[in-house]
Length: 317
Ligand code: UDP
Image (cartoon, rainbow, N blue to C red; front, side):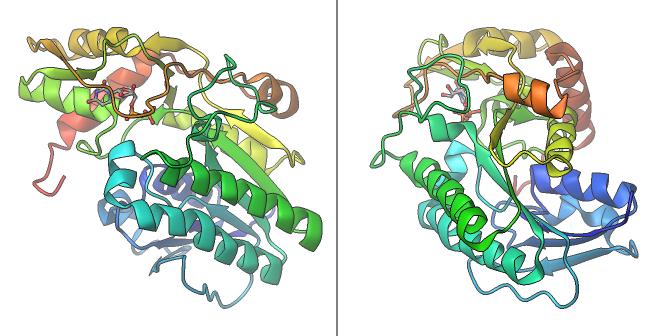
């Protein structure tokens, strides 16, 4: 494999930091950019001092200047949990639109490959199940989740425009719910919230009646899928996620079982526009990338629990 130089926006985040590790481990150079509003230096502190690693604190909605060669840009910068993008609605819209534009501009300038981290949220509250890539989605543009969903939909359109009109080599990964080490324990998403609550002996807060479904993919599987996509010639969007679908009620019970917690489950209001079902159709990833997830929920949860118990929540989490 020839060694390349990667720029990873959002490189101090949950997924971005795992990508930094993977690419450095293969011998590549990595320039990690993050403005640290939801990213965290603790995710990459072990990389400081690495000779092929650089960190730049930068908000990618502003002009991106990178001296020297760049071979690939992986655009992962964005708040990504519903609580985060409700706390940072304007930043979420700006990074998906202006930030994607700037990152694509850098790709064009450097003749680099560009990969957009998109999301299952482009399907909104889906009326087609499971979701395949040709489904156009059911998104409420003026609801509270619209800031994320529409920003990512715009980002996909912008990416395709740069591919078609500027000849930029692009990839789009639609990421479904992913979990694992380096999620923030208090980022508001179901898995870290339930684990934090179970470990603290607090009630687990299931929203609605818990009948809504999600399909959870372990981070190592996801990173492997993205890696294959980068090295493929697939310019169409590709779903990467684990098709094993589970209700949020069952999910909470699995976390109680694995933590051995005596906590109870309590029920609260369902957030506005919370998707009722979600499951990736991964036929395209199977056929064109030869990819499918390998790590079952039980194993993934055990690894994640291990991380959370070793990294007790710091105050600012
Ligand atoms: N959820 C929940 N309790 C929580 C956090 C989330 O019941 O404390 C639910 C949420 O309403 C949604 C599902 O769990 O139906 C997954 O939520 P998450 O925030 O992880 O991500 P989403 O898939 O909605 O983007």
